[in-house]
Amino acid sequence: MLTRGCNERQGLGSGPKEEVLSKLLAEAGGNAAAVFVEDRLLTLDKTMADQTLRTKVLPVLAGWGYNTEEQRASASSSGYTVSALHFQPHA
Image 1 (tube, rainbow, N blue to C red):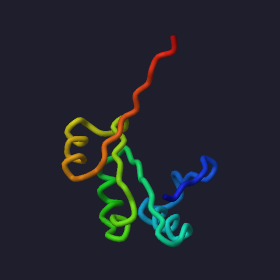
Image 2: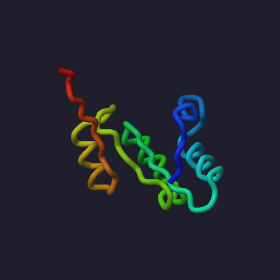
Image 3: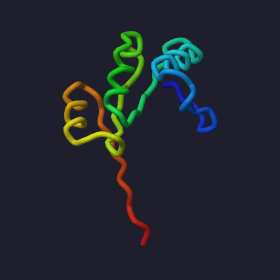
Image 4: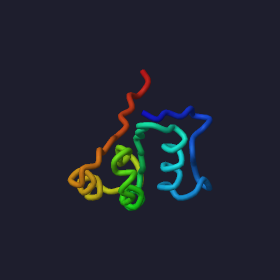
């Protein structure tokens, strides 16, 4: 599994997400794999349209982001993992 420290994260201005993922996987070499968490279903679909990435990347739709319940259901039926954060209030 490809892991990157928080100081090495990729963000706005790094380039198209499919290119960034391909670059990170190539840098890791061998049988590297990655988990890609995205909060927009359209972006997740676009990124995962790359057939090479589909074999090396686990796509996860962030259930807390810019998406609707309908989009989360669609993502789930498309085989994506849908994740949600659950916070406990401090006592």
